[in-house]
Length: 283
Image (cartoon, rainbow, N blue to C red):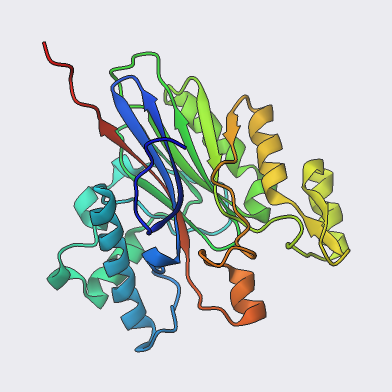
């Protein structure tokens, strides 16, 4: 990974140069705090206080990265793809410290589209939240290098992966002009840790054989990253696993199963993508 943003708020990151554009890809750590407005971080004060803290976390992350505001979604394990260009950036920005109120947090949460993927052709910064599911970040080069690359993010949990959220996202990117597409798989639960009932494994494997797994306890499991990679490669997408980690094994990121099984603090990390225009060469 080269020229990655240096901040403890990111668990892992990567950078690509496409023509005059520097494309940044990152996946947050617990240091960035909980980024999900729908999650009570259990740090005190109830849900309202948690929502305000989340706005502060989002604002601090954007300031640290020099990017934003990031476009977040109301994720429901579906396959819908949203476009940030349909929304004014100010409508989903965290705002100034004085503006980060419960009312603003609720308004932003209500505005967030019900979708599990987003695609931008204007270089809008995008975020996708997870806590064991796969955060997938995608970047598509375009024929005219002066045009900003097509950016996308997708939430690939078991249901969304099986129902085609990745294929739908890739198809939308291509409709919008993406040529060569690269996808980064971020931190998610691995096949050795994701234990499921045998019937669920059988149903999932019938649709995507590559998800079949056996856990470290020799019980039925699912390897969602292997399934996502197979789906993306079948769609002609280059896949990078440099940013992959197991959320259940890696203490620096949030894990839903870590919360339910081990009593860890709840929260959501995010997969992020944004672009920076490189300086024009001197005449």
